[in-house]
Structures are given as structure tokens and as C-alpha cells.
Picture 1 (spheres, helix red, strand yellow):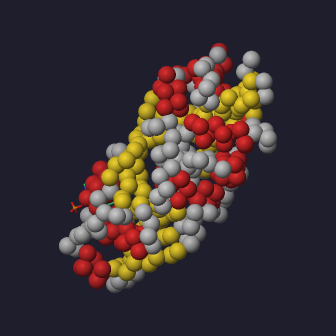
Picture 2 (cartoon, rainbow, N blue to C red):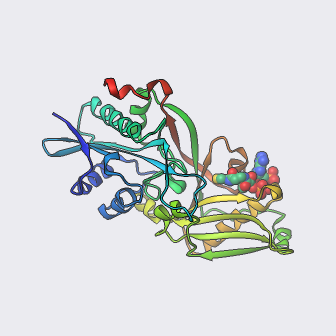
Picture 3 (cartoon, rainbow, N blue to C red):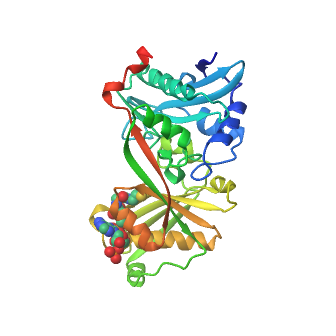
Length: 330
Ligand SMILES: CC(C)(COP(=O)(O)OP(=O)(O)OC[C@H]1O[C@@H](n2cnc3c(N)ncnc32)[C@H](O)[C@@H]1OP(=O)(O)O)[C@@H](O)C(=O)NCCC(=O)NCCS
């Protein structure tokens, strides 16, 4: 008989084994080491052992599900460690390939729903997406830790079979630094008008980012107007080398690309990302990865005109309100 119980300190070795067997190569870190899972899943300030539910039979762990919450918004470093219990997410589902029991994954999802509801969640999601990405950012879901990966069939097939509905899709794009440098006739003028400030080993922007990305050497790029120092655009990169364990290629993740709203469509976004590409090439990185919502046409167009290629996607799901308390009768 299968028993469903909360996480114990003796579980990580078995959980890493399941991860390395079941999580897709693309968009996730594989193989993963025990201390890395420990740091990014069980070592975060929002970890609650009751939210990581393990399925066990005769002392053998067959799968696990991990659910949690996002921070109170806006994320303020002056008020750290406060969470919003109204929105919950099922961040991970991993099940042993060798167990031919479709009921196992279903029961794990129901246990996660029970946990989230017991802590006060009134909307249940599956898949992380900032700010609802309490665990695994840095290990899963590419540069911004989002959604259920398209290659993670055991997870998304269970969700859709159980009535979860897709609510947003994120497109993952990649720039191969062996390809030619992007060119733009406006570059010379933009360079004259602006000043690029590159801050290596930058601090995370808030405690939420800090708990996931602090060990990945953040670099912040800020484009300032030469005339008065106004910030026109900004972006951050982090070292995603762990994601290259499958293909042996080094990579940086680009996140938080933003042009100040009054300065859009003037070429600053393209200039800033081109400068990030140049900086990465000089440091002999192999790839730059970025992601954006499939509905964000300006960002998609920006990346594609620069030569980024779509390589994958992930999806965030939501449970229809009518199914919120079904675990009670399961
Ligand atoms: C996406 C964003 C960074 C683009 O910055 P920008 O400085 O306005 O873009 P640029 O002027 O450099 O435009 C470069 C190319 O991007 C595309 N583009 C930019 N804005 C666009 C828009 N509103 N609609 C369609 N294409 C657009 C075009 O292909 C453009 O080339 P073109 O001017 O030759 O047509 C900016 O709109 C932004 O900050 N958005 C909010 C934050 C965001 O969504 N960030 C991306 C998260 S991954």
C-alpha cells in the first residue's frame, strides 16, 4: 500500500534520484546533486515540510509533489519573508518511471491541493512563474524559473487529465554566440547618447530573487542618458552553467529586460541586449538564454530580430474554481 507523508530530512537522496530520472534535460538542471536540490528546494525561507508530499511504499519513495506560495507584493526587502497565502502553486511533480500506477500522480496532486487549501489558498496554480515561484528557480524553468516544461510530460499530462487549464505560456529563446553579431544602423548614435553601466556580482533586487539566484553571479546592465543620467533601460544576467550539464555548453540567463516606458521604440532595448551579447561573447560564453510570455509581442519581436531562436516553452495551469475542494471527497 502507498503512503503519502510530509518530507523528512532523510529523503533528499531519493528525491534527487527521481529528479534525475524524470525531469527533462532542456530547461532544467540534470543531473542534479543532492546539495543543489537541498539549497533550492528545501533550503529556501518559504520551505514548509508539509508542502512537500512524498509517496512511499515499503520504504521506497515512488514520487513527490511540492507546493508553496509567493511573497507579498510588492516584494520589499524592507519587509522580508512575508507570504501571500491566497495564491498557491504546485511547483513540482516527479514520479518514478517504473511505477505503472497512474493513480499515484493523481493522488500526489490531490495531496498538494489539500495542503494549499489548508494554508488558505483560494486560487490554485501549477507551475511556477514570478512571483509564484517559491522553489526550483535556478534549477528548473530556464532563466526565470517559469511554468511546467513542455518536455515534462508526466507533470502536465496529469494536470490536464485532472482538469487544470493552461493560463499562460512562456517561450524560451536562445542566442548562440557562435552566430554573427547583431547589427543596427542606430548603434553609433545610441552609443553617443547613452552610457552603459555594467555592475558585476550585483546584489539581487530583493529577498525573493536572493533566495534563488544569489549564488549565480548576477551582472546588472543599466543604460543611462548621457545628458542627465536618467535610466533608460536595464537587464540582469546570471550564470546558468548548471543548465549545460546535458549539452556541455556554458550559458547565461537574461532576465528583467525593461526599457523605461517613456523611452520605448527608440532602439534602447535592442542596443542593450546587443551589448549584453557582446559582453557575453568577450567572456567566451556559448549561449544567452531568455524567456518571455507568448503574448509579449514586443519582446518576442525584439529577441527574434536580434537572432534569438525559440527552443522550448512552458505553461502555467490553474485549477477551475469548481474543483477547489474535490480532495475532500477523493
Ligand atoms: C520589450 C521591450 C524591452 C522593447 O524595448 P524597446 O526599446 O521599446 O525596443 P526597440 O525600440 O529596441 O525595438 C527593437 C525591435 O523590437 C521590436 N519591438 C519593440 N517594441 C515593439 C512593439 N511595441 N511592437 C512590435 N515590435 C516591437 C521591433 O522589432 C523593434 O525593431 P524596429 O524598431 O526596427 O521595428 C520594451 O517594450 C519593454 O521594456 N517592455 C516591458 C518589459 C518587458 O516586456 N520586457 C521583456 C520581458 S522578457
